Length: 163
Picture 1: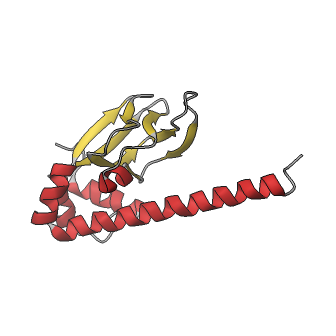
Picture 2: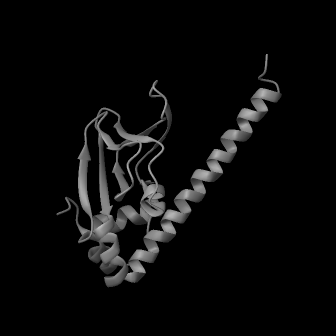
Picture 3: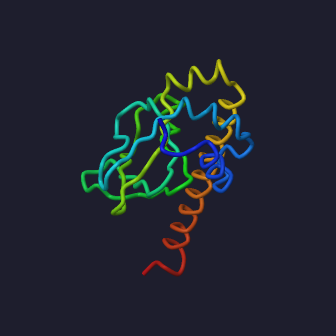
């Protein structure tokens, strides 16, 4: 059971441009497929090497992405309104990064497990397609930001930042 009402989740989706084409009635149907999970600060949400069996909507707090090196270097964060875990969930390949809750309050995530997504595809195909479209947008944003970061690094290495 989720701690929020369908109206609250609907407003959250509208405010964060997640699944914003779903109606209130469709959001109410989607709620039956989701699990709410709370993670405390530094708790691992998804780990390196795991094959994704769930994806998540970050409802509050921040998720930190930790690289695979032994120094546990943070390589990025995602906050409220973000979709996480979608890459391994859909390509079924092991995760390259560890995702953990950061910030003193931890993080709340609505999880959609693979079995629930498989049911959703059959029982509510419009909702499933909407989630898939949001995944594409999420991955597109990731690639665009990665391109900007690589460009900035190249400018630094070959431009004015190099000493």
